[in-house]
Length: 431
Image (cartoon, rainbow, N blue to C red; front, top):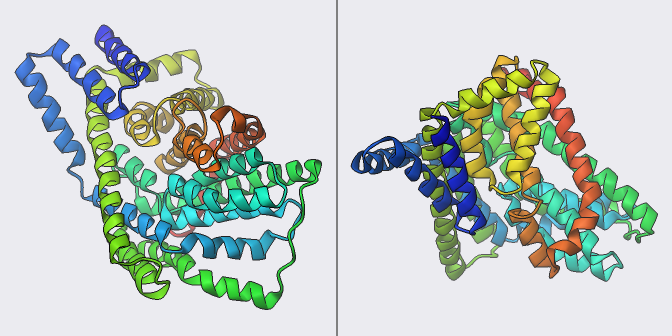
């Protein structure tokens, strides 16, 4: 059993080091392990069955809808309106464009549900604006990269839906509510670092926006912000499920982008549908393959072995949670967030529950932890997108990213050891 588990891990790591796409690395490693334990025909049949079973969930229907809604928001003129609103709010503060970048990423990431979309849409506009105003190009990219992941914590979030599936049915509504305070706290921590950095470097202050102009920007952005109220309010009040909410989000985003803002034509709509289809295919393949690996690890009793190993090192709750966070931080540096959630939730969630941690609290901690990995080499998706949009090499943005990393780690520790940050809102609404 142990040798099979080791082979699973070794084959997976070797394939990753050879730059084999992660979905295929997961699938091949799982198949090799199955072949060691059963005849070839049974192993292949089991693999196919587990992949199909991994996708056989009504909850997953929400993901393609939210992806499509995000694409509509991304290309529907939402970003500029949110940026203008953020400028009116904080643009006149010292180093204000850094704050604008962070708030814009938080707002856009929340309405689109995509960190990559936020890094691309906000970074493409704000990077040029910040450079024009005298900000360091690498600093602008670092701020954009670190703040883009807030949209994966602030709902609606596809990753939290994936975690609900991996945890065996944690309430999506509760997870969505639980993400608000940690997401806002993360944005606030990044703003503190950005403010100190801007003050020490003497970055310029933007012009003050009058009340009338600021109110105009708010009205322009209000229909986009209303999506959050519509989706979360509908789920929490029980009007519709998370899956139904995703379909409502698509309809609302389409009406907003096509008929009200008129930023999308029929050709653009076709491109959006094709792009959304490709992204959905990639995500679903990752989920199918990751579900298979998760089952193989359970078959090999790997979760129990890891649990016993961690608890053998210490039974102190603070130490165990620190160890789990360290492992997840390491995992996040080489594995994308979706397969990481699917594979490691079954391993660590039982340990967390044994320590008295709720599945909602653990889910927020885990997703926040893995969000940091999206900003770190060698596989940080947001890091690569943000650097590419800024026209910089990875090594050029690492240095200004370091203090922002520290802020993210501080927030992670706060969320880990103060349960109320994640559980207060769900408890208020009765979840």
